[in-house]
Length: 311
Length: 206
Image (cartoon, rainbow over all chains, first blue to last red; front, side, top):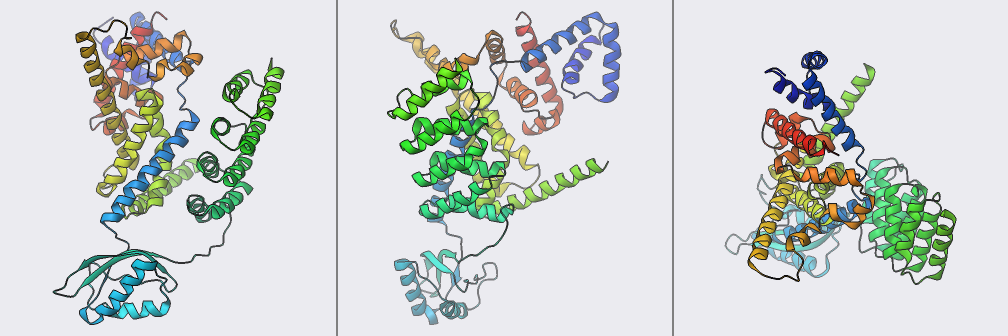
């Protein structure tokens, strides 16, 4: 071993991670042909790499952990947004003059009480009242057929008579497109997240199940299966996922359903989907574990039959 | 050549697309932020799971990382790639968790030294029992070599562990690891070298 060997051994690490420049690589290869000590170090490090590659414990993230983590994050983001919207509602802001203050007050009252539907006529009445809107905060146009909700008074200055309002504007939407169209998908995913409308979620999950062509749809269906409160939505999501029943994370979602879903009908669908997989001793063991406390005799019998055929 | 051009064009398209998403998210578009999350969340969860070694802490790191990103996205100035930025947050959060765990371990170890509870299992062992490595589910799959590797990884310092994780398991280039650590490629190389030397020595007799 000569004085450069320490440098060469440093380079062995980089070489095995493909981080060594071309010239240095050739030089190292030449050195390894001549130096026994460095060759030994190289072999030892390469053996270590092989061991790590063959690590039988594996390092895969459990498939259900991603689903769980996403759900927990979405809940937290909802909370953060809720807090934000309470303190600062940036959706739109309109400045009024004293002349039309009464009209404005009436509008506020309507907004606060009912979440007023504002017609085109009303929008036109409101718009001209904004005199000299500050250029850095121009008054946004209220859509012709928009609906105002969560209207709040942000500021009311009795001296200048200026009032600032904030709220949310939504308007009807109609969109045509192919399932492959990203906008169509995003809209369907939004419908699937609409916590107040199970009918819309069911429709969305039905449409998505028709053509579960890619990972994003698969994920949306898994989320619906695991987290939706509505049994109909969960059932439909499960049916849509059967196409992917041989995939590990879909199996994990089915297994989760089998262990946690209170609806026996959905659990039966889940067990049928899981048993459609090839006979596998590991799967049989997991199923036995997952269903040993299940009160449904059909599920327990199916598992026993499956376990019997794998022995 | 055509394939290279195609890949380059795709990368440019992806990066422009990501820039647009970041700008939309900075303007309060939650959907855009969620799309950004979806692009990187598998990698971040994998990093957290490997670094912390158990589901609960991995989920906490995952959540903390993206909540921090959500809160501070307005300050993102495109000086680095979003990927580097989010990884930097994730590695800092992971290291904080490891440090907290270390502090807790030290406190518990101090308590157990000062108290005399012969019937109680050593608190240090209770703490270790919550880790991924000793999870019965994992042990089921674990064999002698796997356990040795996990023991070997525990001998690394935080930074060595981090660089090794990012290079070996996450497959990031050392240049990027240097950026993520707020340091240089050379520093990342040194940590990687030290980590592999320790692992090699530990695993030599397996």
